[in-house]
Length: 115
Length: 112
Image (tube, rainbow over all chains, first blue to last red; front, side, top):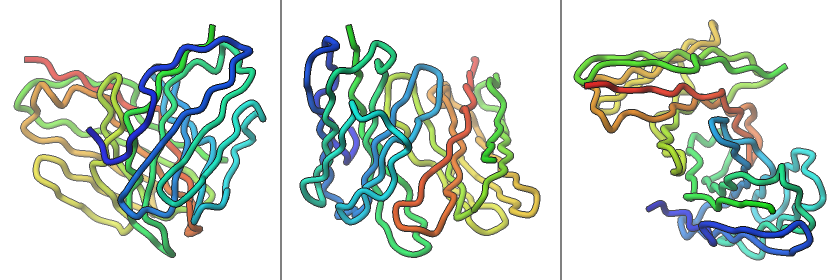
């Protein structure tokens, strides 16, 4: 078990569905991240929130919409996804500050399958 | 451009020592991280280097040379449970929320 909790663990959805992935951490971290990981590939950064503001969007398609309701929660809203979006979606968090050497802590991920 | 290279696969014997190398070329550098990821699980943090030299943590050590753009992860007294993917990642900026750039990962198989 990790200190970053993601729900659901598995999600199967059709291309017309709307669903949300949720991530929660109570370590007081002020940076939170969404990554996408395909099998046998490294995690690919999608979004970074720093102090609840979106600081990095890696040119992610608009069918993925992140939201940070407060410092402990991070959501990823999904709509009209494509089969190629099937992957493991990882949430991570870290302490932040100038020159921070703190690692990112990852959740166990949501395994998403698009039919 | 940004580039991080690591071997794709390595095999080692239980009880032995293995060194996993990582070379990087990035636009900025604010530290290098090593993560371990077992199949179907989250990456877990192993080590961090920002200054040149060796950091030791039990059976795991990590080395960094910034002038050479080079790091290695050393695993001693290998155990079967060390079979996993090992990811090298560079943090490229000082900015808050600085992104990690990951290498492709090295799949380590430990055999009896």
